[in-house]
Image (tube, rainbow, N blue to C red; front, side, top):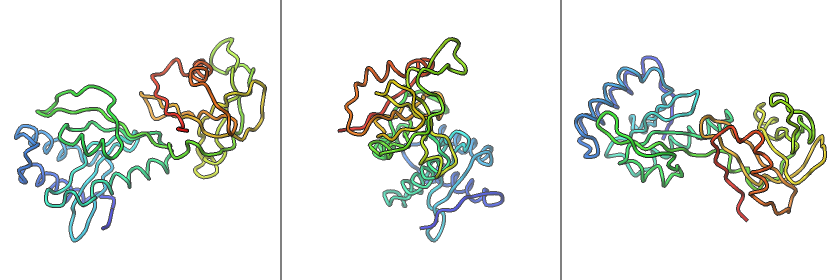
Length: 257
């Protein structure tokens, strides 16, 4: 099994693969209208996306996504190669790339016939199904970074409790806010974090990741960090971070006991 990025002249092979699978393999989940619509779209637009292929003796599965948003456009496997883990392997590869580049989630508009596969992988619905091109799609997302839940981290505080907010007039910080030093050392990226349960200015803090706030409109995420062993009230935390998070549609995943 070999996963490779498909670029330049090799894209012709990927386009032919997509067309063969959609148009000629007679998958009952594709209507004739939908098959032609998707096939034409990919022939015209595949070069605009990041594409990876999984090869054994030949190309078996293809994934295409928008690199700037980590939004999956297409995940397709030959009918006689399904249920062998090829699609999951490609998703694992893209998930690792997203983690390496510090994205908070993967998103996809999933054709309804593939919903069970995505659900089993760990994607969740984020909206109602809609129809386009003769097919029904459901928006989904896979939240990244949850491996940090319950982990002990070190926070460098760059906005102390009681200091003035740089963008919200007359607002002082009701929590200490900063970034996770471990992630900065690993990736060079600033993972934002709120420190809860401490009502005094800090410069640094060591605590446990008790929750992660995800923004629905973008790829931002904020860690909620508390003292090791402390029990936190979810409602109180939501109120404490609402000074900034009230401006976004968010989803919070909490550490389980």
